[in-house]
Length: 244
Image 1: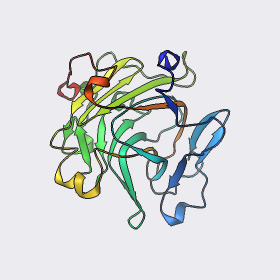
Image 2: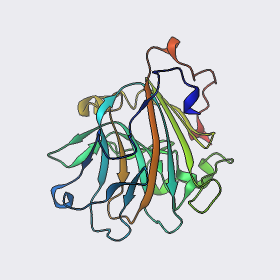
Image 3: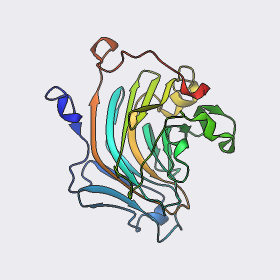
């Protein structure tokens, strides 16, 4: 799928060999722990043996505004933890916190994958769908045709795509639209402007606080987008899946 793009459009964010271009962000007490590594050409997050940690992110060194991102991830049935793809986010060293929106990846409950949780301080709630509490998320809010594979399935990998253009965020999981949402008035509000997130910032992969998690990522490609007329993947009308 990546090979059909025009030459020079797509750029790899992971070289398959090491974590060049990425940085682990965490609180000081977790810095000596190795939860992120590269193995067999994949980025591996593994905290199965030790859940005595706070949030630990693998953050891109570069930051992006409007972009299309494609990656593959692999989940495991014996992994009870939560992960996610944070985007347009920014780490506060003093607070030990990564502000910004996150596309959820939740192996214990695959239906939740594609929900957007906002980690921005002053928000910290589901924003797509918009819910007051984490526990308000329900399986019936997910697309009925959503499917997520585990490592012992065929195929064993999942395709995740996300497009962020202005306040519009669209995500597909294995070809199924799991989020198509206009965050106008949310991603660009005063709280996000204060933290300098929501419209531009870093990408990050997450290990949730106190979780035992194993997940793998590979084939991480991104292309930056210009104005709307230069986009190649915006022909479909918006459908707000948060209303399901």
